[in-house]
Length: 116
Length: 112
Image (tube, rainbow over all chains, first blue to last red; front, side, top):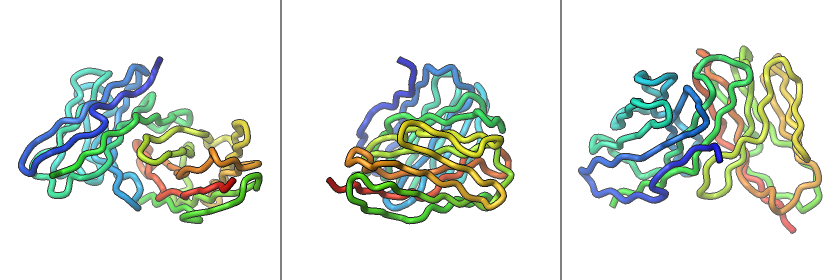
């Protein structure tokens, strides 16, 4: 089955720790995205990558880091510098990261991160 | 900067009713608009993608329209069912065409 997988589903972090969220896709998509969702708020873009070995900051990149060494994988690290990391994190991908009318975005099931 | 809003924020209807969800965007130079469904604690499921050259798209009981000149899109759900209960979000491309800006969503409850 083609799709996007995220792991773990639930993650607990102690203050001061770095944690890494996994995102893998087998859709052969060039572009991948990380969003954060807080209760009562819309999705906010953390980082995005249009192609392997390249990524850009989104609206709320502070305290987060990413890598894109393989087309299929786009892991997100939540660092200790992120002051309020408790949220629902969603990974997405699209065929390309450019303005194409047929460029449809698909999402993974999400990871819920809680800081203890 | 592209901004996306959705009205109403929440909607509760009895089963069987037809209903309309609204999405507005500020930058009309979009190349597509996408509607999603999100169940509690889950990821987003793509419902419909309307390309800029299209006025509407249909999938089963769902019909989405796009009016770029007025900066509006509507999602029409026919003969609503309790299983339609979820949050519905729309997303439009940002001004650079590289990313997507999401609305806050409409939380729909269909009562049996």
